[in-house]
Image (tube, rainbow, N blue to C red; front, side, top):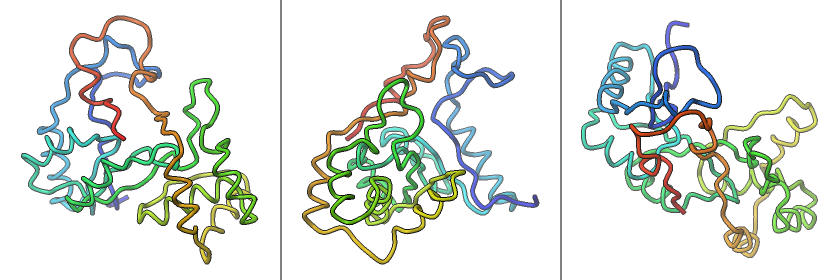
Length: 214
């Protein structure tokens, strides 16, 4: 490729150079040079290697830090977002700063760490889906769409691919939106779940990047 359409910093954390491993060893986590990394990403955009730069999994606090020195502000913040994790505070902040939100894990994600998918099993979503002749997944995707948020969703199943496209030409009522707003919130993708039990984490404060914002 000659260029990328979008280049994202995946998380506000860093690991020692070497082969990627998952889960990440705690001893391998090192402080992130956020300013240095962002300067390099800005240079990529200036050189035409990417049309747009952005971030992923950034909480409000890290965005505030980034914006203190960024010459090119992030165009996008790609984060976990769905009816079960609605990101109200972060969405308000990003809207005020002109940062577009893209929702990953729009159906709750596969990173459940042994827990039930709290989106697809939501009684609220299933009740609305039954009344509309839709699936819980379609209700979740439609809700995200109505928040003026981008959606990152994937499937290798032909039927689900078709269903994922059938979220247009209808809308949720105000009563249904109110029902969805009352869903108990739960974040699935947590930094602490992505770290192994090996070693100790002394160089980074996890709460600095993994704070729970509702």
